[in-house]
Length: 253
View: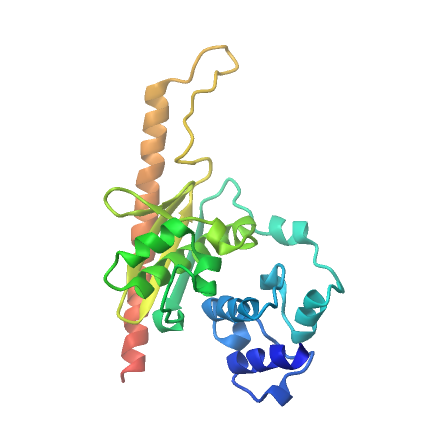
């Protein structure tokens, strides 16, 4: 098993398998980003090597501990999660992904990377697009952006976090305003968390005085929140597009 796993790791680390040691770093800083981490573990799973909570794995030694059923220096999940949970403040998450980092697939519906990171509904949605991989990259970036705000989402397998769309095609996830943009090479997503705003909930609870909430006041408050989110999202996207333009200038200079 060791040699087969090391051969897969070496491909992603771009080194000879003999150089893979227990101390070798295999997180996103070593393999080239978040998508590549998910691709790595999809490749391992395809060969029967399934690692639990692989986003917490940093080294080859930790990976083998997981695969062999050993637990050393267990991570305090509650401490990690609680360090990044939306509070009563507006929170922003941003992510940019290289579209070519997504694997080419003959059948997206059965490829381990896509089934591990996207729901059946999301896969169907992307397959209807002119460039499915660009659409997948946009959804992946949106999930990364959301997970940067809320680690409870980041700890789940990505296919359990489903990005839906309005009838106009706008991406949505309950409690968050999301915006996704693409170039030929990159997908960018921004997520804004609005405290107390869950678009799947309706405020109909009785007040402490025994009467119902004033519907008009609730509507006004929700409209105000949505306006604030729209402004924040617009500002973020302008900044992101400016950074992307600067990056393109540097790349093609």
